[in-house]
Amino acid sequence: MSHYSRQKLSWANGTLFLGTILAVVSVFPGLAAAQGGEPCCHGRLIVEKTVQGNGPDQFGFNVICNDDSGVILDRAFTLTMVDGKGSKDFDGVNTGAVCVVKETDAGGADSTTVTPEHGMVVIGNDDPVTVSFVNVFEAPTTTTTTAAPTTTTTAPPTVLGVTVTKPPAELPRTGSSTMNLLFAGLSLVAAGLYLRLRSLKLTD
Image (cartoon, rainbow, N blue to C red):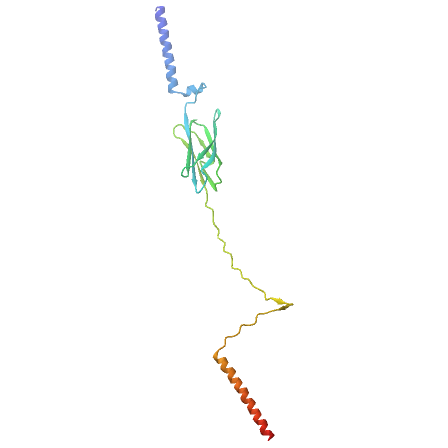
């Protein structure tokens, strides 16, 4: 084989080898990550918020994600409510990373429910993972107090240490009372005349 033919074959073998490496890397991108490149897969984290009752419009949160390399996401953010709901997406989070979402400002809610528990999820490869928060604001109770009626008692006045009492009200006069008085008066007159005549008779 001539020198030219051997050189041409060497170039052909090198091209074939290089093409094989590129093909393997394109099919298995994880090999690139093993050599210090970007991870092969990413997922999405969704933080959702629901408000029940009359609460504020904004709430504070913090998310931290860790994988084998350490902390890959540490961010504080605010969710603004629209019709009692709000959400935020975090794309490009490494698959397999463990993320914890915490609510740093609940706006004075009476109760908060977090799903899943503790706000902890593992980022998947295909389907997004969600951490949801539900804050409940209870309506204030109204208490109505009815005051008992008060009774005022006025003590009778005193003059020089003597209590002055109000005289009793005069009883209404009736016709029968007047007739009784008239009859009593006539009886007294008749009795007086009788005694007078008897005394004159005894004198004679």
